[in-house]
Image (tube, rainbow, N blue to C red):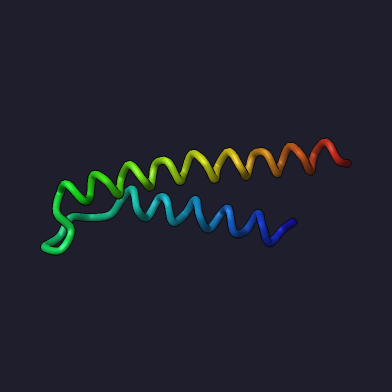
Length: 61
């Protein structure tokens, strides 16, 4: 159970990394905008999954 929570936390951090990706020569503004959207979606989905695990653990006790 704790390994799953750590995996979800790592996914949230990866979402933040994607959302704050700087543009460079290889990453054009259009692709950076796509990564920002994907990062935002990952943040929301895995944050909700972490909240679900927390509520489930709270109600189990």
